[in-house]
Amino acid sequence: MSDGLLDPRRTIVFAGDSVTDCGRREDPAGLGDGYVKILYDVLGADRPRIVNVGISGNRAVDLAARWDVDVLKHEPDLVSVLIGINDTWRRYDKDDPTSTEAFEASYRELLEPVAAKLVLVEPFLLPVKAEQRAWREDLDPKIEVVRRLATEYDALLVPADVEFNRQALTVGATTLAGDGVHPTAAGHRLLAELWRRTVS
Image 1: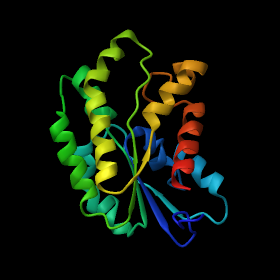
Image 2: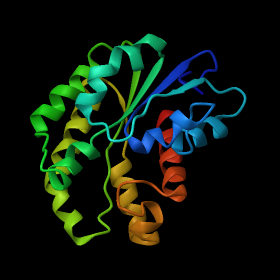
Image 3: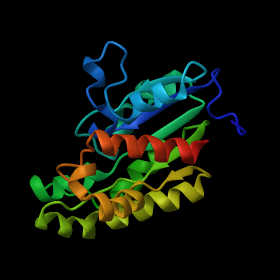
């Protein structure tokens, strides 16, 4: 690749919630069965070292609490972050909101100590239930935070929310994410392709 970000001598760490986790803690290879595994397969034999540290249910504040151990200790050359949907979801299912300001503060805690190149993936939502439309009020400002931080930290931005919603108009939301949040196999393929296109 022209910028060498996917050079086989490099290490990429993927951090996030269930969308990244995808059962990686039960997988002997530690990759799970989502977009991280697809990227591992697609990048082939000359791939970088790929480490998945996603944990289901996590919010930005949870990532920040374990960042040194989960991410920095691997001495990554590239750090990919996909977080934010649980910061929104918990407001609606557990009455446990995360303000946009608190989300941004936690997200900055993630980015500040990283010397590596950063890839920020927009959290995304495909409203498949009527009540999920109201979630946009909470999620959209958090997506704006991610976009702004990507500019500020000279990170690559993967426009996942934009692209998932654009493609859902053609194929239907449930084709890409059955519950509007967790990608289907097709959704993970889309996410992997978006990531690869953005980074290479």
